[in-house]
Image (cartoon, rainbow, N blue to C red; front, side, top):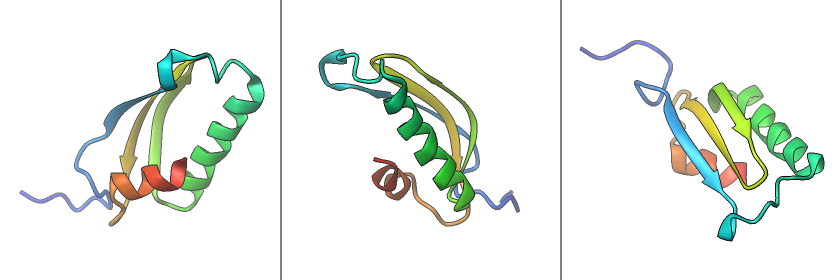
Length: 80
């Protein structure tokens, strides 16, 4: 049975993004703000829904779901 929800994927996804060689590139609050601003932009543009995220010094986790016809690879490309 096909869902009538406006989601590209039927379920939310868990994703982990790591810094190269686990370097603490996200220790600075400025780096965290850039990530949060980007997530806010993608959410406001109705490309995805964020359920939860956590940012550590060398990686971060997201639980997100693509909206509409947006593909994860396209959203990730615009996220970076």
